[in-house]
Amino acid sequence: MPDSFVQNRVPAAATTQCVEVIEVSKIYHGGTQNAVEAVSSVNFSVPHGQFVAILGPSGCGKSTLLMMVGGLEAVTTGRIEVDGSPMAGPRTSIGIMFQDSTLLPWKSALDNVLFPIKVLKRPVQEYHDNAHALLDRVGLYGFAQKKPHELSGGMRQRVSICRALVYEPNVLLMDEPFSALDAITRDEMNGLLLDLWQQYTKTALFVTHSIREAVMLADRVLVMTQRPATIVEDLTIPFARPREMSIGESREFNEICGHLRERIEHSHFEGRR
Amino acid sequence: MTVETAQSRALDLVPFGAAQFPSLRQLRPVLLPVATAGTVLLLWQAVCLVFRIPHVILPAPTEIAGELWRILPTLLKEAIPTTLDSVASFCLASGLGVGLAIVLTYSPLLRDTLYPNLVAFQLVPKVALAPLFVVWLGITSESRIAFSTFASFFPVVISAAVGFEGADASTLRLCRSLTATDWQSFRLVRFPFALPAIFSGMKIAMTMSVIGVIIGEFISAKAGLGFYILYASSRMETAAIFAALFVLCMIGAALYGAVALAERHVRRHYGRR
Image 1 (spheres, chains in turn cyan, green):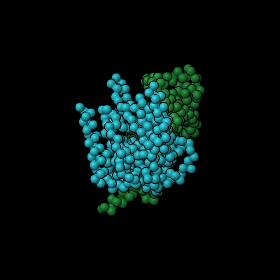
Image 2 (cartoon, chains in turn brown, blue; image 1 turned 30 degrees about the horizontal axis):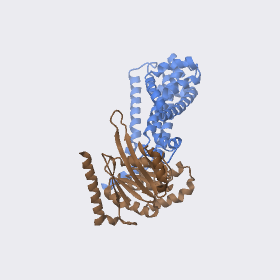
Image 3 (tube, helix red, strand yellow; image 1 turned 90 degrees about the vertical axis):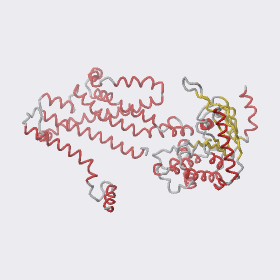
């Protein structure tokens, strides 16, 4: 019966909330071993247009949570609603960016960007200009015909950003998209994403294990911990947009980072006991 | 000194067919095997002359060359059915192999059912089954093609199945997030990713198809190079046997070369680099 209770409650809120995660748990039954609770009764909601970072140590279940929001993993209990309707599987209104760029090695940058259009059977010609504009926007002017092996790791990840944006999804889910990049390139990509966000404001969920990255990019940071795999803090980041990368040097920024670090370490320690 | 090395390096980079003469190092992959074969032929000739080995036991290379020239029209005529049957069974083996691999990839039930049996069946010496095909299908060309297909499709199944399984998991997840159909993700991702693997299976299948057809011709044919070799051996025409073997080698090399060339083309296009 709790299901119908939730359904009765939600419609009023659905107009403002884009993503709603209600009492979601995920339990893996690994063979004869005991069941592992990867995500444990998580609750949060994301209003339209907000950029939310899910911050946590590796293996705390944050990627699993993101994949459940994207409809790529089933929830064990609880429910997830996106744009007011419950998730039952992947949707084209949700774009996902993965840890690696997952470009097709035999296709040019442009064709890789247009790949979703092809899969969705939309008229590819109509999206050509859009794809080119996106590539220009992320600084890949003149690289449209290059194959992935001719591009650097950062460039490949830029192509995959374009690919996630080209078909205009309402929600963008990013699963540690820059964790495979070196620190300098990563900073560069953060700057680019900040910039892009000014133009293409979308609802976004961004999973990361970098505290600075989370504070730099997000309007709100959710801290997730292991044992139990749940959200222990929901912090609004006070910096206005447009943001400059230079906010990273401010005292306030570093204080927020310090607080979050303490929160993660504390709950990590608590969990061990 | 440095200028010289730079120059020789530049020479290495010059593509084949450029104005410069290819250097010795570039020719090595061609020169070494040719020189080895030439030396063996010379030794062979010398041994035949010095020890006066009877022609019926081991004719000298020059004799074989003469015989080859004399009976070339006959050999070429006999080569036609052998070549056609080989190509036919290769095509069937490739199609059947890839088809079966698709079934094994997409149906776990059939994979669990068929795969162990398929592997176990490979332990049966296939040559020993050739007479059965005569019993079942008679002494027609179709019977030999069937046997040869049966003998050569296995490597295609295995390598194609491995290729389909090895397709990049996160790219397939991307397809799923874009609500791609099974057919789309197969056509756009799995199949192109598997092409290099499929081709390595097809190269083995090509050589095995020729072997299969020759075995078939040994048993049942009234034409073909396999038949001709048996016929020549019954008349103790050893030089003719060698001449037929030579033509057979050429056909095998040409067919294998065609597949290898196609593979190189595909690898250049689809290989992951």
